[in-house]
Amino acid sequence: MGVLVTGGAGYIGSHMVWALVDAGEAAVVLDNLRTGFAWAVAPEARLVTGDIGDQRVVERLIDEERVDAIIHFAGSVVVPESVKDPLGYYLNNTVKSRALIESAVRRGVKHFIFSSTAAVYGMAGMEPVAEDALLNPLSPYGRSKLMTETMLADAAAAHGFTYAALRYFNVAGADPKGRAGQSTRGATHLIKVACEVALGKRDRIEVFGTDYPTPDGTCIRDYIHVTDLVAAHADALAYLRKGGTSIVANCGYGRGFSVLQVLDAVKRVSGRDFKVVSAARRAGDPAAVVARADLIRERLGWRPQLDDLDTIVRHAIAWEDSLEKRNFRY
Image (cartoon, rainbow, N blue to C red; front, side, top):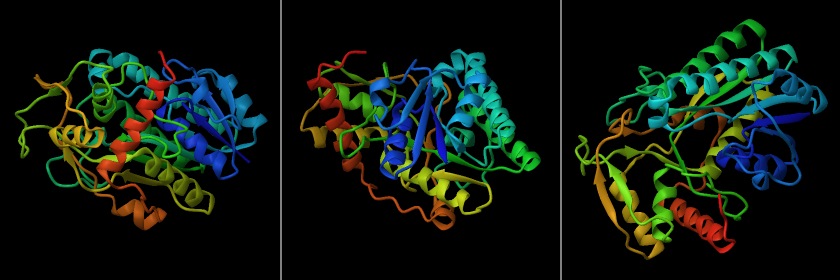
């Protein structure tokens, strides 16, 4: 049986494809390559350039590859951008996900794993947030993802497939083997940007808001290594294939670091100082978002291996340095 990975040429998706290939799975990638890179896809996987909203292409791939599971990463992910372009986010993240789910139903796909987000919780507060917390997303990005979770729940109940919606917290780092990493043009991820500044690719980094109700005034986030996140997807796939019921689960470590703590870690690990400037808050940014991640450990048996901020930063810097050495250009 095959696994269809949408957005498999992007940051997280490319790591997932490598994990599937390492496990001996037959992986097929569907990506429009607007933010992903063909070279990021493991050569053992089949790459098809196309859009998840093109149901003829999707259904042909499901049939040709005998797909029994879809792992859905494709979508837009920048919170401030979603505030400026809400309709674009509802199209790309919600409308096209609906088309993908419908294609899965029509072609009899048994399992669906969805890349959701902690942004569905909104202003969760300082305590770790559990899956049964109030869902109150602050941005069109978060709302677009929550809509897809709702569609999955309703479609699964009506059509008999099972799904896992994994709510990511802040993903960072790179493949420890150096095969994949964050390469997105104009990336806004804090650790990615800080590594670029440390290596001289940018002249400074901005801290968006220093007056939040947190110990040092900057936002607190739960940073998860991309390799551990991908392992959670592999665990979810195995769980569903063994007959597990549908699940919605947080993907995080259960502890947070402030923006300033992260920047200190990048300076420490890189051995380089760099310019940090304060800027106004960004729309849609909550003060703190930290996972309560008991459910995924209990139900899926997930055991993270890289739960260490310095390790995350070290792998991110190594990847950024490799891009620099091969004169990578966007």
